[in-house]
Length: 400
Image (cartoon, rainbow, N blue to C red; front, side, top):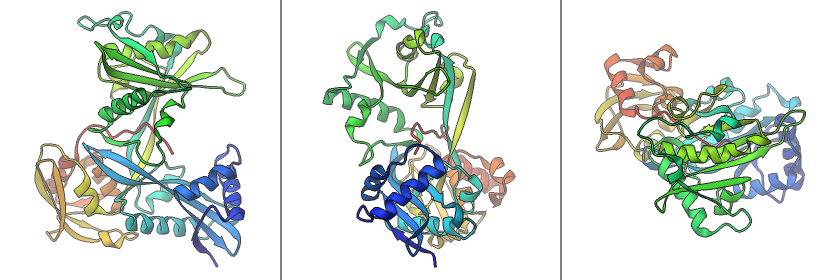
């Protein structure tokens, strides 16, 4: 008989088996020690039949920015089902328990990177944002800003300094986090990078971190790691490129691209996907890794989210089989950048958790919701609902 239990560091046999299951599912080293550490920090569930491990999943404690406000978020990670336990409802049991746990823990939203999107859609997650990456020749980065458009200050006005990886100063660590927060706070989707998974010292883990300043004021930074690839040339992975001025961005790109004598290819994660179209050189290609969102507590999620200047009311009828506390008719009211969801109304727009997820980040408009059969009802009300949540393209720089 299948039972869902919470793993603890003391259960050495099951944590070792869990680490091995994750290696089978996703590759990489068999790190029982790291997995045991995660059971102390994260909520880790295992599906077991006696002492036979059937599957595992983890909920990581994150925070996520939504238009100037932070929402506690449960990051679903490392969902794996053993080969001999497939088609027995193991994943269903794990995800059902995870939704209940996040609701009890006060995490109104949940995000994950899907390996099998249909499996998560059946539990209410839907694509709601992207992690965008552009691939560029390192030599092209090295020349960034050399021949910029008229009116753009030359990169010579930008001063660069390296963060000391061995002994990073508290001031530099704080500067990097403040620059990231300034870029992420007003956006929709990026992690807050606070809490137990983001100790300040982690900011110094990449192979290189360079901070840019203009007239003594920090204005941006870039971080990268050299990736050694078997049977292929090494690649430079740019984790963060944070700057709101083109001259600063060019100076940081040139610093990362200076490794072009030994590295040919660079992959840059985009803090805002739009930058890939208007602020960076044309690359070989750009791809987007989708992330999925679920509203665990719709009223809490709406109350904790920021909104734009547009206000108004929309009546909703929500059906959520896995989270029945979300079921029913609600009135969404938005005014002065805040939203509330109160019971009642006419149910003019009918939708489930997938439609809520796609519209909540502004990822999908009214036409997309209709074409995907994620919403139904009064057309004017649906258009108003999409307009209330509309904003910048939802993005994230961190995967998990």
